[in-house]
Structures are given as C-alpha cells and as structure tokens.
Amino acid sequence: MAAVCAQSVEELAIEPPAAARRLLGATLWSGPVGVRIVEVEAYGGDPAGPWPDPASHSGRGRTKRNDVMFGPAGVLYVYLSYGMHTCINVTSGPDGVASAALIRSGEVVAGLQTARERRPSARSDLDLARGPGNLGSALGITLSDYGTPLLDPSSPIRLELNSPVADAAIATGPRVGVSSAADVPWRFWLPDSRAVSVYRRSPRAPLPTTRSA
DNA sequence: ATCGGGATTGGC
DNA sequence: CCAATCCCGATC
Image (tube, rainbow, N blue to C red):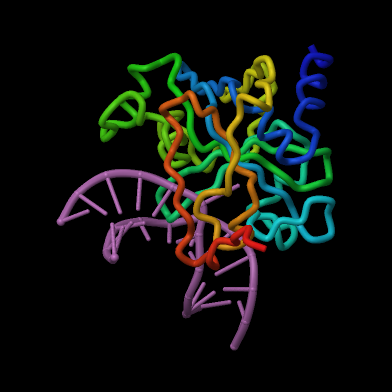
C-alpha cells in the first residue's frame, strides 16, 4: 500500500511543467464527484530554489498560506481567490522545494447530480468545472481542505493518475491572469476538450513580448 | 492594528 | 467594462 503511494508521489516529485502535464487526464475525486483534468498551470517557488517564479504564491518565500507548497508532492493547496472562490493546486516537486500545479478546468465524469447542485448557476454541464473557481465549487472544496493528502486512498479528496498524455497532444501557452512572468508558457491543456477556459491576460501585466528581431 | 492587493467570475 | 468579497502578507 505504502509502495503504491510512494510510487505516485515519485511521479509528481519533478519540475513544475512536467508535473503539471502529468496531471492532464487524471481524475480528481471529492465524494461522488469525479473531474477529468483538462487544463492546468505550473507554478514554481522562491528565488533561492531551482524554479524561481515571481508569479507563484511561493515566489517570495515561505509563508503560512503557501507552506504546503514546500512539502512533498501530491498534497492539496487551496487558496481563496478574490474573497470568494476556492482554487485548487496539487503540490509537486521534491520535499523541501516549493512548486504546485493549479487545476484550472475539468470535465465532470461522475456525480453529475451533486456537481449540478453545487453549481446552480452553471449554464451547461460543460461549465460545471470550467475555470479554477468553478472547479473548486463543483468539487465542494473549502479552505479547511488545505493540506489534504491526495494520493492517500482513504482521503476524502483523491487524485487518480491515469496514463501520461503524450506531449504532442498537449497545447501550451502563458498562464491566465498573472501580472508577473506573464509570458512564461506554463499553462497546459487538452485542445480536444471543450471545457478549457478562455485566456485572459492580466491588465497589470506589461505588454506581451514579441518575437520580432 | 491597519492597508491593499489579488492564479476569478458573471452580469451589464 | 467592473463590482463583489475576504484572507493574507506587508508595513507602521
């Protein structure tokens, strides 16, 4: 049993973009609701670490909020966005190094009825877990779920890794809404899914870099 | 103790 | 385009 968990942790104890890609196609479970992950973003850590990332919540060092990002991989990092939305991350990288993947969008593959009850304003089933705030709602996640081990079979919130998706089947682009490092292409999604959210650049971000010589 | 900014969303 | 809403990090 412990060997199975350890093996899964190993799969996510890697650099942020690789870990984020690995999460595509995985299923996130919360009670009866299962969501197939179709859109993710990679986030690194502080300047002293191997993956400095000013856009990351851990980009300026360890705090109470980002503490779990510095721990082992496969743990739930939840934060409150704009005072009302709970957004979900899966921690990545080796223990002691900060990084995580924001789960941006997914398709509800189980527990449709419960998901609909949790997201009464959703106009279609495709919108149930589209966008990080909506995905958090569909799964019924709250701040009290912070630090939940996702690879523990007895956990109320579980991550079920499936076969890795080939890189050729993954689309890449800048992360949504970040005001710094706005051109770093650390957003990954499955282009065949209609549940992927729309890209929006932060109004506070500097103008996009062009590749003109 | 207080101040201000968001890894967003949905409605106008 | 813009308000809603509140936790948390930074600063005094």
